[in-house]
Image 1 (cartoon, rainbow, N blue to C red):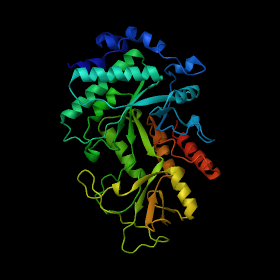
Image 2 (image 1 turned 60 degrees about the horizontal axis):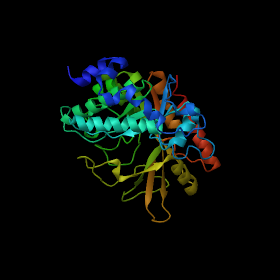
Image 3 (image 1 turned 90 degrees about the vertical axis):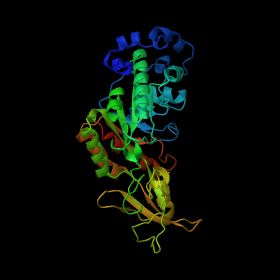
Length: 381
């Protein structure tokens, strides 16, 4: 039995004995005292231990303190921590703050040990509650050695963190389906077993377009449901899956020979290849939900809604360039179906990329932000 497999089968108390000495609790007791807690209440620098029935897990925190509308009751974990001031506020609201992890993909144990040491140091010096792995590069096949390297470093890192504090949260970002999306033939069964849960990124689903090269939805509900069913079919249960949703959309330039921006609905897009496929959403550009709604208001655009996918989209002519664009995005109404699916099927949770892609600077924006957060909260059991 390999070292990684043995670690995963043992309780935390046994893990501490098997890990190299630099990972053991006794050797890290001094570290917490070496960095002053920045919070007025020093208890806010402790790793959160509260349990939640549903994870409302999302990314982004850049404007968490600005204006009304940032609803702390609609989140349990914020990924990619951005400073200790965020930690103090989030912990006071019972919300975890976790960091990004960029592990070495190697069988060099020294490099892995150094990565784990730096990860632990970052956790303790920034008072974070855990990490999320997000590697999205293609592999040649399920048997590619990179899969073994990735699983090994994820497993060892999880074991090390849990041996220090079992309340550390470890998650991993996954494609919307386990079956080779964009060449990501990862060992999702092994990875799901190695972490607390997978954050299933059901957005950018048009990264490779195999049919008509046109603008369309970023996160169609039927495709997201199909992806979750495929994770289940692969042996990964719903309580290991958090459904990731986009709080952003895509703007595409329409290249049709004839296109009426007031009436046309089929927007042909340029053929921009991605990983061997000639058409992709790389022809467009990502735009935050709040910015999209401001464009709607600025241009007094008529918003259509696709009857099958229940997703909004609209056309407009850019004042500066004269180019015709079509924007597809998700709003509280289109996302509601996803959240209902999460709640009704007992998924681990849901949450956006990103919490902060909203408009908190206008009355309309604040109201729309409230709608987005209120919809997200319905994912909870």
